[in-house]
Amino acid sequence: MSRMYKVLGFWTGIIGVMAYLGDLQDMALLFLGQTIMFVSLGYLNLSERMYIYIFGAYLTVFFVGFTYWSTFMMTPGAGGH
Image (tube, rainbow, N blue to C red; front, top):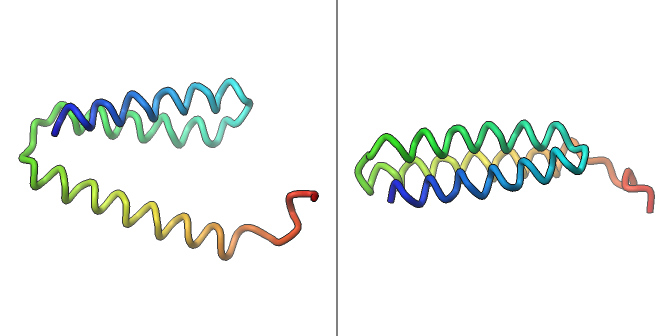
């Protein structure tokens, strides 16, 4: 299971590099933070149950943050279409 956290760190790192190259510095910093978190958790060698609990907590925080952002922070018609 620790290998999967290292794989998650690799892919978030790739997405962070692509965001940086696309001039999305805020997104790049967010994914850099996730990369550091996933890779460091991957080297802790915790039990599989603990890794599942950590991933469940990560998904909960992500979904709450995404729902808040998309509901209250995004304004309709701001895309310019």
